[in-house]
Picture 1: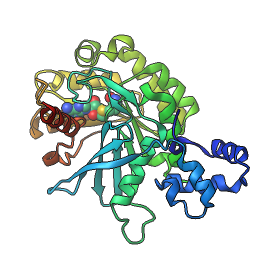
Picture 2: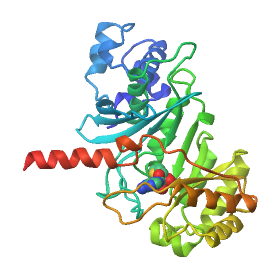
Picture 3: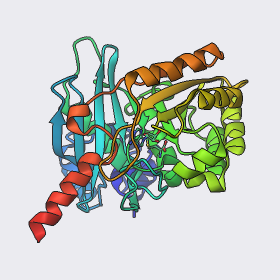
Length: 351
Ligand code: SAH
């Protein structure tokens, strides 16, 4: 059963009716849940109601460990779930506000060749309330700057896991976090990154809040993409690009293509040319990512100069591109790395 933290307004209203409580209590509880408060702390409810709610599973998270980058203030979190599972989150500090990167699954089953999150497969899906708890944990951890309503202003679903592989919970999370009675973070300030589950993407486009879509492309053709991403066998590039184009047209928003530059793989001039020809006609932007080296993986990234050259080739061909700023490199900011270190240390201790 999913916990209290995952409940939406209608479900809370039904629960209040069941408990013979007035309907407006639902709104009060919803606002507390959005702030990550547990029943004991819901001070405007009667003691009896607090006790009843405290009997139910909550389904939230707490901060297990945090590391702050000395370079740029990035905070890497390790969140602990009620069943003891650990998941990562990263808070990146920008001038305009803070962006929280959240995980959507414990691990991942997509099997991308360069990614640390997928090394041990997917342990389980996260509940909507657990993802929401990451936001409220970070919100409480980092004081809000003067004149601002909240410290977490933007959210990216780019941590561990494939969001569209945990479709129902992720859509529920997006509705909860953007609800005006709750955290009220606009879908405009939320990005979802997918490796390209095309049927779910098409469904998402029609029924979910319109967030910014990022597509992890990483290759200019099927031959290279299939080497890096097993998902490409099920949904080849042509299908994925069609769906991405449709998303851009349907939502009126530019789609972001993520492209990790990998030595001797996808970073030569001919790859930029092929990529540009495939993306022509799509309202999009390419986010070039210097591959983060993962110890367990043999693939190597490129130098800053090589990334700039690739960006230049794309620009010459009319494709807008930028190189993603690397943040938190001193604290294992990349997906899955910190969690792996802690799991390994735990295993050592148990020996
Ligand atoms: N499953 C989703 C979201 C999680 S990964 C997806 O695939 O998009 C977030 C982004 O980080 C993806 O673009 C992913 O391809 C990228 N990524 C994973 N490992 C990386 C690495 N070692 N270096 C650079 N980017 C990486």
